[in-house]
Length: 510
Image (cartoon, rainbow, N blue to C red; front, side, top):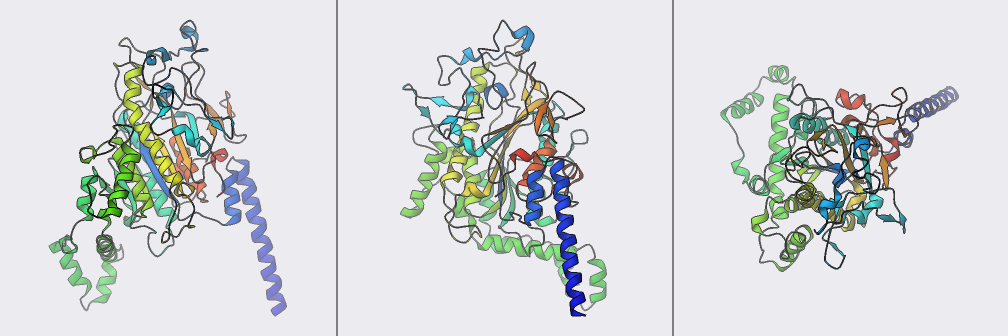
């Protein structure tokens, strides 16, 4: 009998291993090799952090993530390329009128950035945070089909990975889905706030309630929420009646009416709120005021300088609570303090202008780019201490994935007012944990910067609709899940993401 059991166990092990290998081979065939490898290893990065950085208004790709060489895209060739770079408009400004190609390991890297990515001092040195410094940590996805040129639709499409119904969002926010997936099967979320959203919409249609985002419109709002006394927690008459009924001597009726978890969710919400308040987290985000404690004051001054120095010599001050730098600082502090696992932040200010030239758009988009660069630099240089469930001594960027996006791009040709309009094909930036840096995936068209096609099997751009299709926001969400070791086809995800395909060249085993 023992021998038979041993043989059966061995047989099951062999069959399981064979099935796993077959599944991995099948997944690899369809372009998500790293997901297959993660499944074979059985490793899931449940402690991974995420920051979603939103640039509102539709950003100009020629000035940032998808530039063109002005020596090739000349005014004489405009009728053929249908692309008008007009980088000369940046001459005699703090920007340089050229494409920026950072070096990686002493050699020209794969990435190129547009001229709005950096500002320069008179001596030629870079002013403020340098996003190209961390090129080995950054990947760019180009030629992405946003499916719309309507602000709300494109914004909500990327936010949820599901195309809206009219203007109305459908599905749960990608940040909410990721937080729920990473904590699935765990007794409690790994951070006080699984998801935190600053001036970014958040939705939860399908995930457990504890993963709904704490959504605030300002740093002051967050401080007010975190500073509330425990006794101030709302306890309405309805909640009191439910409590009384749950404590009554009618357990059968209680169980019947709690089949949907009303009582359980209520108690869980109350317990979570009490725990958050007891941690006194507000002090971690009050970096715009001064402290009598010398150590705390030094930390606050360091934050102000890191995220505000590029705007004014003194750094951030109390009047800058709603600047891109302050919002980026909040995201960085939320990650490093262990307060939130997934943070969404509106890091840029509005760039939806149809009447301004390249220089004006560059000046509008640059504060968000510099704040993004400061955030990457902060997480790439800050060391993880004890108490986070992560390897002490690692850098925070080793365990944090950053996503920068907008609702769509702007047209490659200027309009009759000298500005640019809404354009379907966009790009996004990924950086940090689980992302293969110094990579460019996809491409917009050489003519009119149209939507590109990507061959998900052979991992290359293609002109053939039979071999490839456009990269879309659900594919980005699937890539983020794959970077943690999860299979993006998991049934627990919203259908659009479960049907999407990860961009395997971007997924780095970690």
